[in-house]
Amino acid sequence: MIATLLVGMLCVYLLSFSLMFQLISRRLQDEKMGMDVFAAANLMLGGAYVLQLLEGPPGWSWTSMVNHTLTLCSLLAYCVGGARFFGLATPLVRPLLYLAVGYSLLQILVNWAVGPVARYALLAGTCAVWFVSMVAVLLYGVRSFARDLRGEVLLFAGLISGICVLNVIKLSKLLSGGFAALSMDGQFSMIFYVYMCSLATILPPSIVWLVLRRLTDRLRGMAARDPLTQLLNRRGLSTALDVYFRHPGTSARLLLVDVDHFKNINDTYGHQVGDAVLCGVADALRASVRKDDLVCRLGGEEFAAICVGADDASALRVAERVRSSIEQKVMLHDARYEGLRCTVTIGVSDGFASAACLGQAMQQADAALYRGKHTGRNRVEQNRGQSRVNAALDTVH
Image 1: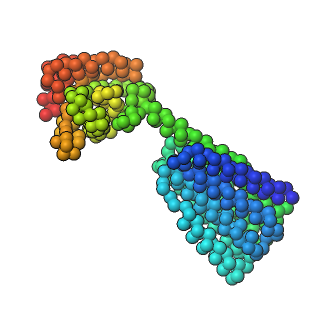
Image 2: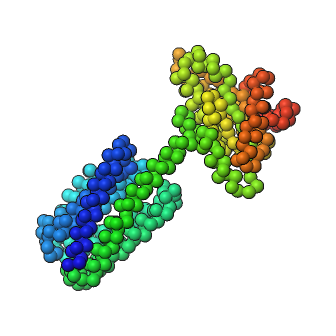
């Protein structure tokens, strides 16, 4: 009686969260992050448990066969929902149809050839293998596609491992004791459905939490990046520097990059072409700096790069590589613009060792940039003086 009540509660949980997932997916509009598929999975699993309540004692019936098929299809839907949450465009409808038809035919064959107990054992064994595979994928994800959700993914892996163990025990009991193992009054059924109710209570809110966290991270990322070039903005640069300077004994150099005669480009070709030039400069800048360097658009035609851990010579080498790369890059290949190119002037600051010193580094690099603008443009200038720069650039060439 208690186990039957637990199954009823399980149905209510699953169907309620199915409705919640569907409402959330409609709010998310284009990028649903798998919530519509999680809604379908909960609906199928809830429907399977409704059929279990209706079918009566275990044995062969069409209701029971549909119940088992829906159970397995719900697992496929959960996997597809998880894949879509992590950005994989995974199909759902056709694999579900193949699985539903194939597993239904397999049930008929097993029931005819071996008997109804074997059909129930088939479901328990298949679910156990499926859960093992899910746990393996989640553990792999902790080191690859889900590194930013390590704690949550490990929680899911632990909970799924529990239901996997219960299915293995269920399979063993079916093979040794037949349908007696499935008695709703038995201790095992009590444990099984208490655990399933616990999963139904924990996992759906956890999925909602993951979606909220992903949305929050995305909003934070949007707030830290320039919408045109997707480089860091000032806020994002300050945050990244705070993280970098947590390690003692670190230093950096600032490169201040300004596009030469950018107003003329806007006035001559229009703002749309100007935006394309800014994106081209951003791409060249991103490609020219070192792997761990930070790249930022400060505003307008002014960009910045932070050469982390660089000495004067290294910073100058990076600056010269940036300058040369932008000078050689064709910003627009359209014949109307005759292979439009541009140049930049770069000011290089002294070394600084904390995010609080960024303002001072900006002043130094800006003074060097101002000097470069007034001595010909398309050049690299360092804060410490022209002779030092010329000597360093000689070593670069």
